[in-house]
Image (cartoon, rainbow, N blue to C red):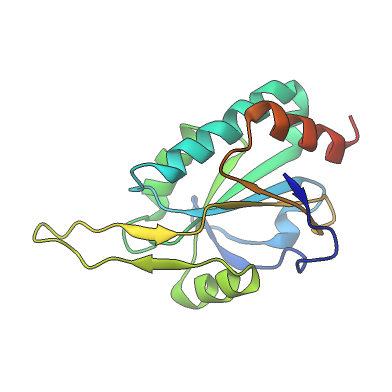
Length: 167
């Protein structure tokens, strides 16, 4: 992961979580937050990245309870709260599915310069969403500290998170 301290804006958002509750960045104050944009129908990048993050958290043992992984859907039409709840539960209790409306999604993706594009649906109505695959890491005060993604190993992520936690 790369140090981005002072280069990105603090964590800021308001949207619904997988349980239908409105949550904001303040809902996660005191936790290290990993922010990842994706969608539940993603055939490759999302499940691979979330599995990597899950393995990194497993390596942290009890300290993983001090971390939240916020999975922001870039496909809120298909990723209902129920779908998100089932999906993130597979990766661990620290994972939270966020279901933005179009306005919140647009604001958050612009804030962190995340790109996504929904491809046209096929004759069965199925489609893919091309999207950035970065992991934004925020300290317990909501300040951006690290940026990671493809190629980061669970060991390296766990090491960086451990340092951020001060353990």
